[in-house]
Length: 220
Image 1 (cartoon, rainbow, N blue to C red):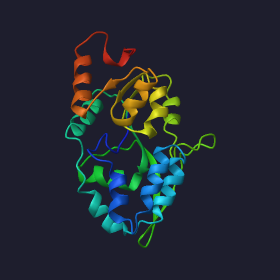
Image 2: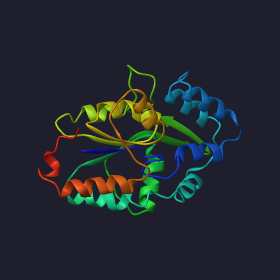
Image 3: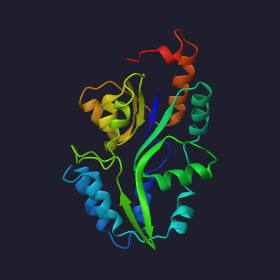
């Protein structure tokens, strides 16, 4: 079972950061971003504070994010996983409205998406966090609960950021870049570095040629 982060993993940029920077009416979001990176606040507190300064209508936000490119290899990788009947899931600390708008624009239908939610009140964005954990304030979306629900499967995680640390530690194999790669290396955790999804796609294609079949492999 393959779990994907979204921002800067399936896309080439951090979409949510781009949205906040583009539509904020002041620079208050910068201080919250730095506080989150330093570990002084969790991502839920950070997002709630940052979105208070954002002013954009639903229509305008949809038009903006539709211009965000996907990693060129994601459609190919996604199709290959479907053909091989390997379940894939998108886990994000961003918002389902943004993710679904981008995927629809690229004509990708993916039903297994778990993310935070947005409600529009004119030009204000009101967030909610259906997958937040009562036991941990670090992440607005506790991604690891989705991996823990599938301990009967070999779980592969593909991600890039701090919100991917917890789920990556529960995975059987991890593809990592960015701050996730730095964090795992600092803890001596095994992972495979990647720059884009072409490398992940080639990994799966390579495993397809080996024996035993891909679905029975226990990854190191």
